[in-house]
Figure 1: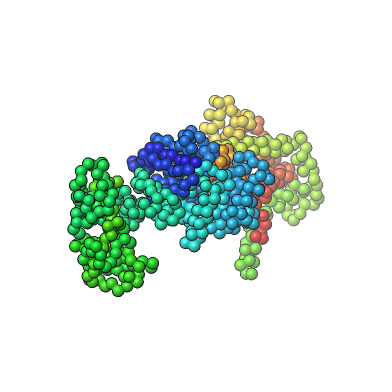
Figure 2: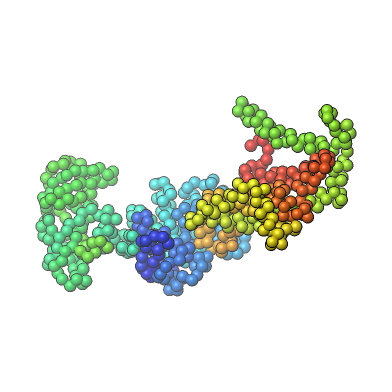
Length: 358
Length: 264
């Protein structure tokens, strides 16, 4: 079901700063949305408020168009899978998965059948009689997912579902979450601090910085078109040029760079002036070496081999820029070398001045 | 092998240390004339036992009173100690150190020091000379034991299991019954065992508050011991030890996670 958060605010007693401040967010039915943010951004608090385990100080939570603020957690149709949601240690895997069904008073045969079918779906068939300590970390996480999904919730909340897993298991678990989400169509919100994970997993990313919603967009969109400098930085943005927008182009230390259609108008509606300060940004992986339209002369400062890519630090007219290149394209570069770089016009993005600190 | 043998010897020494003092008591209870320097009694008899079990001796009545008082005191201590221990184990609050100090106080302060004052207070409240007053007095040393044990138990308790259960559709009482209780049960049994035994072995508070009208087993035992009836004293002493030993044997599995005995 569609989830709507409206002006959600929460301050913990004894804390000066609000943990969550005026958060408004709509999660469309059937979507897999990542609630992304650095640790301490208030993500887990938001999840607990949606699940009914914490009460917001202000704001509303609506599920399927109805406010669920007054509904106790066990009747919300929302299941939160905790980050440290190891299975209940005193129960077997099957008893764990059947826990919610038993609490609803379903008969033992019905519970057993549902549990068996669910264990099959998460590839844990035949392990039902094991205790949690007899299961691997990956199996425990899959069991925790099964324990939630077997309840067929209207909304599934996963708090850092991959954080306790090794790299290999992480990919496996991520694929399983995506598959099961697609199959069941359950509206899902995943909390994560890892932007790479959010990009792969989710069809929408809601970025939470300092308790406020910084941007909501599809992964590609949020990468290419960050709303603020903070968003750009969170997604690995490193190239920022201060300057002014005038007549569809950007004046800065590198000279006058033409802006793509639409980008130059950003913020005009708010300000109503065509000449205004702003920050130009370009993804490091979009920077090209070699001659081309509007090529700039650059000097290589240094290179760092990152495995799949090489980071090249450049100085262009005294302005530092970074480029991420395929290692073979950068292998011949040496510090001090002079070369031409191109900033493709379609890759330029403008952050208006008043949203610098948002 | 060597370490095993040392461990076995140490275990046996400890067992002997605990059991040896009971041997003369057991012999006394079935002796008919046993004088120094005889190694064993000259004749055997079950007279002491049959007298102990007769209604006139008051032993069975004392056993019943002790059982009643210790059970009720334990039940009340659980009711107070579990929520209090939870608060102490899980939350930080103003004055927590003071509460902890007050809780330890009855364990540190000898009962004899507070008994006279306590008697005065109970007298004014009309609580002397009856079982309810004695139970109330027993709670003074019993509740701290229970609460401190539960505080330690909850100190290691992860409440995220409770929140998780709630989100999985469990109502608050279901969370307690299906998640909290199984997690704290071993500690709860330990605490209850302590609580029961603290009340069970209480002599002074029973004497002072009960005013001699509440005759628990230790009071009956002391009466016979001071009147020189070694045979009856032996029999009652064995009866007196029995419940504790029995409860310990039954709960040892919960407390240590294995069956009683020297072998693992």
